[in-house]
Figure 1 (tube, helix red, strand yellow):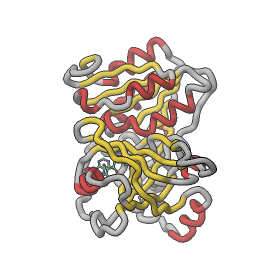
Figure 2 (cartoon, helix red, strand yellow):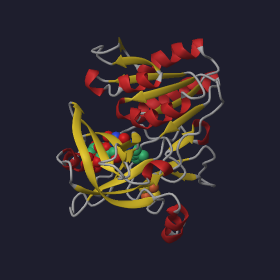
Figure 3 (cartoon, helix red, strand yellow):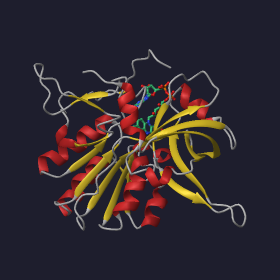
Length: 299
Ligand SMILES: Cc1cc2nc3c(=O)[nH]c(=O)nc-3n(C[C@H](O)[C@H](O)[C@H](O)COP(=O)(O)OP(=O)(O)OC[C@H]3O[C@@H](n4cnc5c(N)ncnc54)[C@H](O)[C@@H]3O)c2cc1C
Ligand code: FES
């Protein structure tokens, strides 16, 4: 597979942009989870639910690579004073897992950062009026908020949110304020029902067998959600969090195997370009790696 980076950037150029910008706020919202608001004029008009951005701290050598983050929400700050235009921002929610996110967690209002985005394809909204079930595992909830805000205007929306403990359950009241019915489950029962979010999904699909499902979270959860939907013939869109280095289809570091993949006729799909959102039936689930591991070679 050969990829011309210049052509890819040109192709994406209409919607994506590099922003040299500043942080408006960066707060710890639950132990180890931060919510960062970043000034980004013009970003909101281009961004679709399910897309992502690549984040880098300006003037720091490490981490070398930008880090990918889902778009949680976009919005406008009130005007500073009469006649001044309102300021547009984008918000990300992130979990501290390594060197890059640790550096991010130490940033403050006014610090200079770089954003590249919006990137990727985003969700499609499905059939009007059909019940939509969104399944979020931990930080996988991020791309579902913008999606929910779009879907509630046309369909009843349910959010099934799962985490290991109560600390992993974020922003549920914000979904409720949109008019979304929410159900929480935690592995240790510290919030909501004790058990796996996939058990709640099975029950919901008994009640709403025609529902359309959207899911984002760890690979083992996505695989379980896919198996449940596949057995019942339910439409499923998944957002994958593959490891990404460039975010624009140039490095091929984020490929997954497509449903048509064979050794003789390989079908590789770039998560950053063909995804991160895929219709579940377009992926080869037998070959999807459900281990969370990185190559460890890049910073
Ligand atoms: C499209 C997309 C959207 C994402 N959205 C979010 C988001 O909204 N919020 C959020 O907190 N994170 C999100 N991630 C994951 C985030 O990019 C990584 O957590 C981050 O890059 C880790 O950087 P680090 O330097 O702190 O960790 P590293 O030092 O690079 O890695 C630390 C640990 O995290 C694991 N890790 C790194 N990247 C990933 C990944 N992509 N998927 C699974 N495990 C990973 C590594 O295997 C390693 O064990 C997203 C990833 C993708 C591809
Ligand atoms: S991250 Fe480089 S091709 Fe997808």
